[in-house]
Length: 357
Image 1: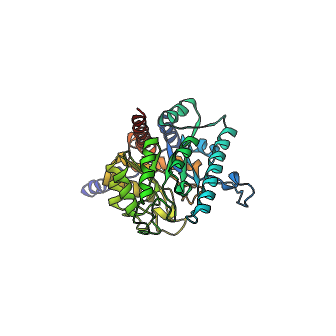
Image 2: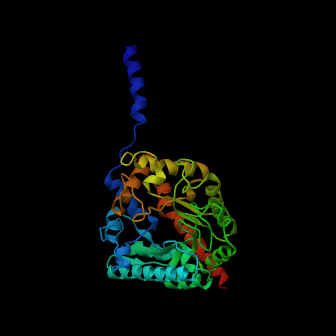
Image 3: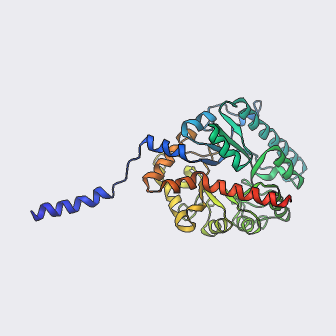
């Protein structure tokens, strides 16, 4: 009898700590109740530049995939390669950005039955209520601003509501995680750009920026900032991921670190051996360090994003399942998937409105 009791006592803890299996119906029901926002997606260069020889292979990003994955809003980035910091380079970058922003709008117009371009937090919520997918437009690499401060307002008027200060090479605004210290963080022009973005209501994005530039941007910005697609250095020690000090500075400003769904950022396991548990490890670290209010997601699909379990937009709900199975509440997931980003957008918009009075 004692042996039976001992056996039962041994088995019960194993049963009670087993991971709960979440059904598709549960995941989809949660997505119906929340607003989900992916803060960084690249878009098909072949669509915007059909004569430039880019691959036309079907990518990771589309409105159809958003619908399948139950993703409500995606920030579509006009990605600009870094080139020479001279007049010719700046002109090329500006033309490139203008063409991509126009292309993004055209793509939405061609799919007006299922999607709409949005320019504010309220419009994201309205799109959800109307049953449409929301596209918000960003620029990845403010190289296209050149040295012209009026370019910030020019692109804002074109519909850009977020901008990543740099990419993988120093521009006139700041240095990057690739060339730490080349510019000493933010340049004087970079400081003016952030002030102008604040004035207009454009979200400052520090993904790709150097350690120093990130800390300076967090200190300087009058509004919350984001890292639209980054990982955690404390989990995966690579230069592209954010240190504790950077994460804490972003959080102290009221901002959000958006965890990238990028295998190389998330895991050091051989390709194909990673899992969404590795992604959740970054979330866990952030929650412990700065709290649930400063965590979000930015997949970087069609820009290097994707990992086993979430290869494209159609599999976004698998991230939700992993969070649910890890024990995060519906309220927590609602904040991470959209609530925190909406809070940042509203704060940025409110500050800009106050500057117009």
